[in-house]
Length: 300
Image (cartoon, rainbow, N blue to C red; front, side):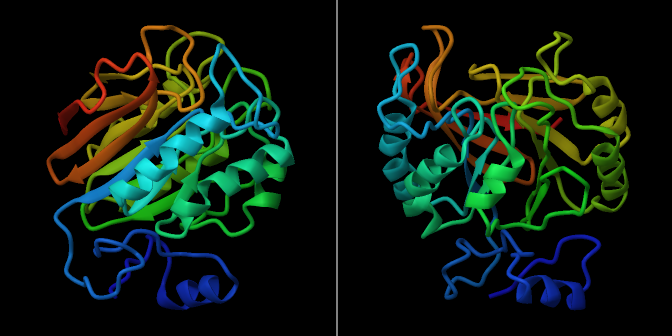
């Protein structure tokens, strides 16, 4: 099965990473990482996106009339049936304080997916890096060496997905990428020019105190890099599509619970193509009016 090496990683580095237990290769041109008899490159990259799962250590814990643990339990078979090449969780994986028991429950819930496809987890303001790593010891993807940040790069023939780390303080609202992470991204994008790039992070990028504090720095950084086509994020528990400065902004719905009755609770299926991405909402609770609706978001 053909593999794709991440940028800045030669064959020797790839072999060393693999021997040490890390997975440097994430998404190949194959339909599935676990299907060796489908070696031809796929015309699309099929992913599932989750956000704000807020899984608690206590399976019976509820908030706003929702049980986040039960929500994800019901969604996992749907995702397995959809058979994506990978699953991306854009942060706030844990309930509030990123406790070890939260991640243990999350890991158990995700196991049926992990058996079939890699799961890539970003970190949000209700996560804890140390506790997360202690439970998810083996994490798929190429992880650049940036101090105190958990970044993941996924490669595919039609798209490159970069999951950034916007965790600033656990259980406080605001997010921050930080200078070192932004510097790494700036250098990386100079060479990552051969296909569309999608950035995934947890925080919304407005001007409020509880959003991404260095959003302006991020926008300035990506402005000259036209290969950056979209930003996927969560945090607001809202499902919305918009664009600004020639980029598509995909605000993912929460899996755990909504803040407003008008918003869906669920997950999003994404089929990336060279010219854009097909997004299908799977609304499992909350406002289910757009459940199953597919929208094509064209790269600008």
